[in-house]
Length: 564
Image (cartoon, rainbow, N blue to C red):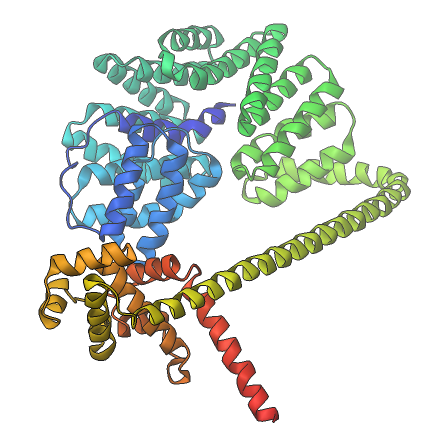
């Protein structure tokens, strides 16, 4: 099961790259928009704190926004902080952006960043079984890092080149690159790198030299750093169990596989569970324990299929499954696996395999008739279950729909109440403008009269000193009067007039096709954000909701007039 380590191939590439500082760290060719720069800065902080879930989630948001803005730089930069273990689903999302990001860094001469992403892309391609394309990216990354004399990042690329050669069955070349990675790790005196290199050598020697394999795997366990022990220890244990199984020490191998299965289940690591089941199936098959071997094999394939595992990992278990079912006379299952294997891997099916398929088809036909009645009953049973599930689903759908309608009604009721309060307070505010009071009150009346007459508030750059000059007062006097009588500042006062202007425009059918931002600008707001903030603060509801309510009222009023 050499390919189990490939599930961590992307992890190795990105993690070991992250341990070395990029020579191009300060070599940014241009800037993104302020909002994207802020998001990229937040993403880097998450990366520094090793909060990789947040890095991935924020990276997705950055790429979506950068796509809309046509910002290739932001897309490429959002991929650089990713490090650590990345699951198959997120690998597929990253794969969509990596070729474009690599091309961007190549065209801008950012060789180190290009090499980093090529290493990650090559590792992802290898996990899919696209070994030729993976080698192209990995070897290109390796050449760049040799020119840059970057030993640390070069180690991870060499290790993944070895993994790729191992995946295509090139044992000698795999060992060559694993030895190079071991030498680099020793040169760097890095325990994490040494653990990874020794582990790969042990896995590669497993079939040909089991004693050497156990020695290398044991050495790998000695070098695992404490901070990575929970992650790498499972990989080391898995490889050790395989090597023990080759030596015929099945009891010890089963104990280790069961421990891996329990720990993977506890951490919800589905790929680890699938591989543990596959390892147990192999050991039980060697012990001639067919029920246990079949159970664990089916569990492994079921998990891989459910999580959308890579095709090469699913196909890897097919020959073993076919042999297992044939050995114990279960020709129906043997034929099913052989047929699927033929469809998925037709280019590799030899004449001998085709002959085997033909023989299995003959044996299968003898069992088929006996199973037809049983299958029909099972089908009816499953159909009933499906109908019951469908009915339950529709019931849940109806429940959530009614709950949503109820919540929307409650929200609208609350919004209408807030709108009524605003209209009352607005009317009271207008009345209070005409009341004479003390000196401050008279100054405010003068201020309000000026604003109503001149409509100077529609100027988004209106300053308090301009108004003070117009009404023959001072900035301090206006501020003091507003503070004493209204407990507000000049900006809040102006925004109140602007909101009244917005609502007036809402009630004018001439402007019903204008966008909210345009109406806000006509009323004097300088930005979309300041308008939305002021409206919700003063009125209590969102401007879109208020406008819709006004439109509905106007429409109802017109219908009444037409009817009369």
